[in-house]
Image (cartoon, rainbow, N blue to C red):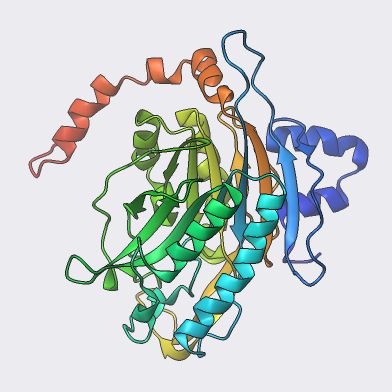
Length: 378
């Protein structure tokens, strides 16, 4: 059995056909219809998958709101020891072709993985040359390139980069830029929760974001961004729902050893709890650094952060999800959504009506105080 196969593929290969439909219904929540898509160019080593998530019920007062999202997972192009600009430029060249194909496939919103223009260098704790990947979120080369693509194809692009805040002391942030279909930068979101475990030494480079939970009212729907580690925090997802998000993207860069068992449930649970669509995107490959580094996990010095395992997927507010992309290679997953489903699920399941924010807000305020005492009855 190939260790690089996804669970989806293992089941498809080994479960008898007469049982597979039943298994898939339990795993995915419904039978998922595939979308026929134009084939990728033969020289592109990129998996292409398309799925149509179940539509909302027909309504008399609203037309269907059909949106196609494209999520892209990928590995590096050049070795990490190559010049910084060359590394970024080659990733740009590759991803432009993926985005172009997504647009040709009718995609309206495209999102890449966390820090898609660079390696995940934060495990090394070295500042140079890695901080040279940071760029201005509004005028940097990546945003300029993505803006041109957004205008050319009339698509929304969600682009997670390393930001250099040149107006504020050159501070670095983990930032996602949202570019509307008309080329306007609607704004940005900075990563709200920063990991401090194992080799994830991100706070050496940047700290928690200061922009709250903005929801961007794009041409095709209201979207939010939960960056990577923030998916472990239910309140982070919740506030995007309170702010009216219809789709929340989770650009990530996580390794199999610590997080693969959590990956397939967290974004799915968030979609169910908050009655919106979620798109979980993870990078692929094992990135090897020029010098050894150590961390607090007790391992001997090493040069790898671990295996990024891809497996990107999309979930609807009723919990129905697509199969995942592969674990080890580049991939473009296209999902067709009906945004009317968000309100219909709220009406049917009554989660917003019954969530009791008044009950929890008081206790949360108390828990944030230094003299907090748990409510324990002996």
